[in-house]
Length: 213
Image (cartoon, rainbow, N blue to C red; front, side):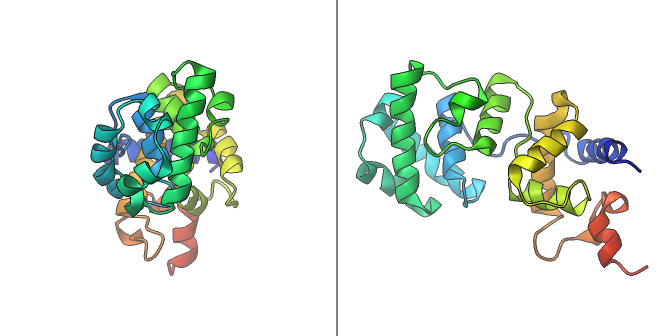
């Protein structure tokens, strides 16, 4: 089976399993999504969702963040880890959004990734969720699962993004990424994946390699 055919089958199975899959971060504005995604680096979405209500109640706009000091932001995000770096990035990204983009969240990859702390993963999520643009959001779950399925043999996120963009229809790319993440949390875990319960086992190279004939 070629990779394009396999991707089609995998996407169809994931759609049956997780038809309502969506971004697991809570947000009510483009700015909130951008900040929540920055906080989610090396932190669970569940943890981020616990801290953002108080954070966004205190700092309601880009101007509020831009005028804040790291010391004011840190107490709200401390439990997310790497809180000093994240607080500096959030403040500086808001300053740049105001000074260079008129207070609006950019709608293209180049401008988004020019913001402090914003990489392609965050940019692709924002472009998809806010502007409806196709893109592959490559996180640790996505890297692990697509590699186990045999779509690639790399850990390089940008290479994986380019590979999967050729295999997944643009209109389904964002949904597919959310479905893969849910499958990673529920079934295809990093340690002790539940291969016996996995609907994708017949397409999975990892399963074929690690399961006795």
